[in-house]
Length: 48
Image 1: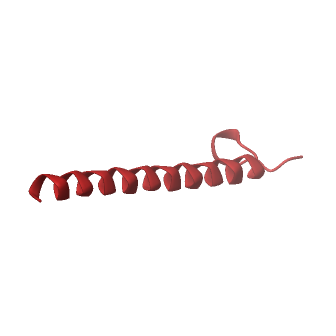
Image 2: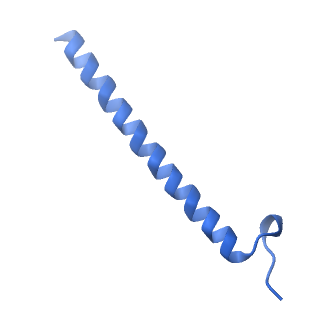
Image 3: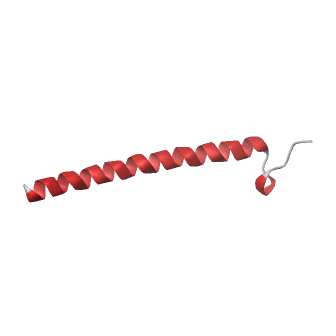
């Protein structure tokens, strides 16, 4: 019998979902950093 975890997910499914959420968080952070960099460049050009 498989162990049942959060919302009837197996342990492996919970771990996979956790890893996927971390991957998405890293992607979001990279996109946010790119956006901030773009904004800083635009401001630098505007104020120069």
